[in-house]
Image (cartoon, rainbow, N blue to C red; front, side, top):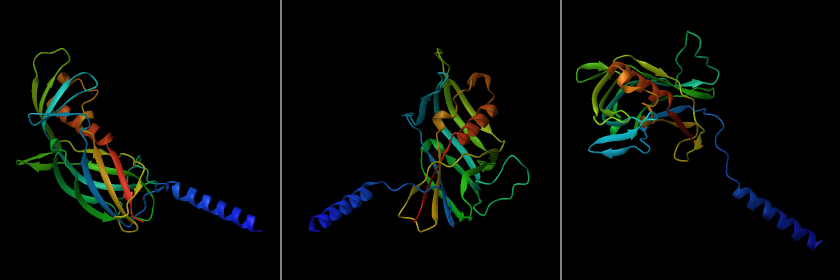
Length: 231
């Protein structure tokens, strides 16, 4: 009898230890009553040279960006049941309307606002990059810098301005738990990768408008939506 009790105790201890070592799974869906939005920039391996972010595109262009002004005028979570292929979209309660113009070369992260959340699981983030005033001109984005084509000796300077709104709908990444948040509170961070945004572009074939528009569009679609839930 004593041996059986000891054996049972050992088994219970082993089960408890195994339970403690097993990592807790991440949240399986984003459902929150309050949502905090942030915008972030990750330049990855781009170098900083004389105030510019310098990188090489997939087509071999060396690019130096001295500034990248980028607007955001709408952030809104999209329910998993929402179908954006049809017209008549009704904005979600998580919609945050704003007039933000960021300087991406600085590489900073900023909390830009908060909104209510709904009772359905969310799967995507709808971002609109509309026009906002910069130096008295309504723009969506403005990129200044230079590029050097593969094999070229001389760099070409550009000052590219986009005045055409851009909208994107990246999917949410895998979420994490955050004990600093209240229960049913979420932090949603849109992370952009500017050094990838000129990939695939034959730069000398583009007008300044096309360059800025294409860069903004790629920036949005290639973004990752990181999110955390309180518990």
